[in-house]
Image (cartoon, rainbow, N blue to C red; front, side, top):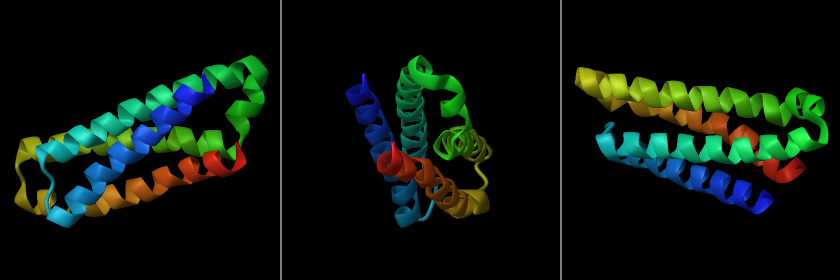
Length: 123
């Protein structure tokens, strides 16, 4: 199961990074960026769910209360808010928001890296 968790989390990193950095480089939010945001979110939730089920068999209290888990939950919530807000921005077709959305994307991406890196180093 650990191998699947690692694969899903790595796919989340790749997908989310493609969406965020492509948006930054192209200078405006596009629908295909949004698809990569959601794909990254799906992979992250899948990988996190597998890890959570593995940790639950060991010690769920310790899993819930450690730094990695807390930042991981925050990151998933931010990824969801990010993808949802990107959807709203594209629906509204506000050119200013579409061109400036990358600032929010990069912020969420950097925050998302915290549990990714701590998981890779400390878990």
